[in-house]
Image (cartoon, rainbow, N blue to C red; front, top):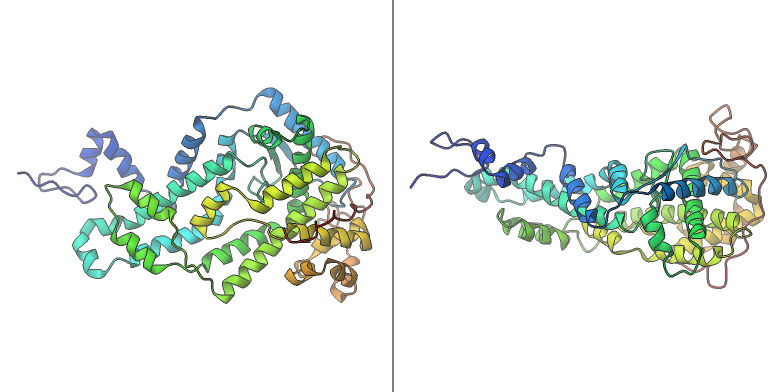
Length: 450
């Protein structure tokens, strides 16, 4: 019987190599392609293929009518926000995406978020193979890293597909996933969001456009915020404890002929059930920052919509509950990365921003974003009124109060104290100067943790 070499080794005694086999059997050609990935700890080519394949059955291109309606909603939203915040428009273009387009446009940011953990897991997998087993396995041991990258690609692809069927915009989960300056709605998911709410489609679309445009103003004109949020997630992810016993069991049971079994092992999770005090502190900082972003957006959108949109209160509550509870797609990434991107204290943060606006006005509220050291911490979320009273008494706050407000036209890249007036209008709307009264106090029970 002729010896048959291991497919991933070199040429056999008869000169028969994997390349020969790949040329004759398409399945082996595809497998060889997957295992030859060298672009990092996650096979992103595979992730993209899995994600797009998963949504292909329900995929449809954005119609011209949907595109026009989405762009118009984003333009009108940007106009309304001029009265609710001193931060000028952060959108350079307005777009409507299909679910496939959302996957493709947001993948670069997901790479930043997922690769730190993936790198640790793949390295730990390789280290978990005992030396004697590594010697006996021969060429098989060298493909453990590729298997890890491939399985991460499958898992992330499935997570992206699940999210693509839920998210309504480029910033829907509180992170700047879209390219900088791009305001985007996903019409298919906007329609699903509004189903059963008994509100007109155009009202639902406009409310979600307000949230998207508000996120872009914040990320576009608080220069340190985007990177700080991504760095905080990265720092948390790099310190996640791995369950080495689960990892060892996974490696011991790897069967390269059973990809489904490897995938299921990954899906069960391999993160240590207990976090270190440092990790708990990092998670608290991250949750607070996410809550502050979402709470500010919630407050600004409420201010912009309350006198213009009959269903604003109902849409606000629906959006809050959706963000606070998350969905199956967020759980997929929690299993994979050990982190749920959920603003658990959204209501507390919204109450804080309302209190600051009541005492210091719209410009004072927005000036809190002028420096990272001014931001409230978790303890401040426990006492929103107390933070509002003490804000401005700090010497750093006083000094920053003398600087031009955030915006595009000032000497340091900020608007010279004129708020939104005169700001560039990239979406083609007419800019309206002035600030609005703060949003009314939270409804009964809204100040409790969400």
